Amino acid sequence: MKPKAPIKILLTGIFALFMLQPSASADGFNLGNPQEGMPKYGQDSVSCVMNISLYREFFRQWRASEFESPVFKDILGPWRWVFQNCPLGSENTYVDGVRIMQYRIENEKNEGVKAKLIDTLMMIYDQRIEYFPNHFRTGAPQKGAILGRKGVDLFTYDQERYEQSYNILKESVEIEGDNADGTVLIYYFRSVIRMARKAKVDTAAIVDVYDQVIDILDHNITRLTNEGDTKWVENYRNFKGNIDATFEPFATCTDLVRVYKNKLNKTPDDVELLKKITSLLDRRGCQDDPLYLDASVRLHKLQSSPESAYNIGRLMLREEKYSEAAKYLEEATKSTDTDRAINSYKLLSETLRALKNYPRSRQMALKAIELNPNDGAPYITIGDIYAASAKDCGDNEFTSRVAFWAAVDKYNQARRVDPSLAETASRRISTYSVYFPSLETIFFYGYEEGKTYTIDCWFKEETIIRASK
Image (cartoon, rainbow, N blue to C red; front, side, top):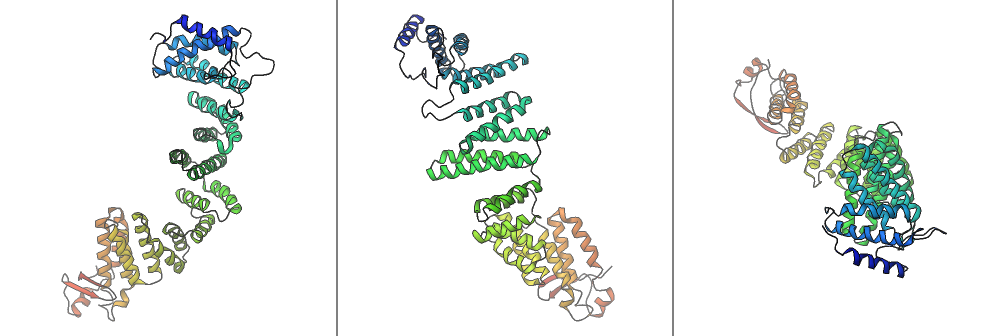
């Protein structure tokens, strides 16, 4: 592809530009903070201005072709001269240089050459920090932001240099704080995981960095939400989701509790923090730690919901605090999440069974079955209730045993609808079948094995008369 402007015209423009030397230009010839005593255009200012304009013109054409034009080969010579001879000439030398080196790295097959190109890319970032430490428009320091891009590129192109990437990204995040770029935060977190895997840092560092980067992301999500910037809110939520997914396999309960217990002590009424604690400890299977119950109870007091009620009720049930558990699990059944509602009904049924409130327990189990007929667990619970109350269903050797038929019916139904519970159901069938009335008892009371029978107790069930074996 030929240059858009003939070389003669281009050189004429370069000469005019050099003669004028304006205080600022769209190409950035006067960007940055020239070091005191160093000429902006180096020792050969004419060659500097000429080479800047040459490479920039070719670069524009290359960019317009979506970085596919063979004009790329014409960029390298003048760009390299500018980089080596007039480092203060234009900040674009470094901005464009990064793109040039990235292109060469991604298209280089020789590993030795690629390694040298990566070193050059790192040098471009370092030289930009040295010669243009402040943003050309705002005057604000930009070292942290440039380090962030440098660390991301190093981690991307040479993962064996993970420790160097980690240190660069760590410095960037420490400098930038809440202004740290989301992509930088993602790669910083990935780098600390690599460091932990290689035993360069303790695994607790993963939790510390996770906590640090999530705080920054949460801060920006809140800020952008308040500003009404929905696009970037979504971007930051995606950054957060990426880090959450990466974090999931690594944190131990001990590390999580250590980090979040300290945070909760500082802000015990922070609803978002309480949600984070309960969600994270739940996902990591850390519900046994007292922090989980403490956070769940605090969250429920500040912002009650079926979800927080479920967390508390489940823990209360585990601790055999049945009356308290029932109250919370009742509330949890109102969850709009079907799976959560099913589990709440099942746990509430178990809780009421422990309280010997059999009619209500059966009612909750039937609610769970209504929501998921293929779940065998509620049938097991109903069977257990029937077996537990058998002696209350009659006053003689026959009627006080008929409820065991209904119990076994439920166990059979459980293993029919849910093969995963076949073993559990079969054990119970073996256990309770021995309590069926004997053949002699059945005959004595005027009944016949194999006939239908309606149990009329606190529940009604039609079943089949069977003798104990």
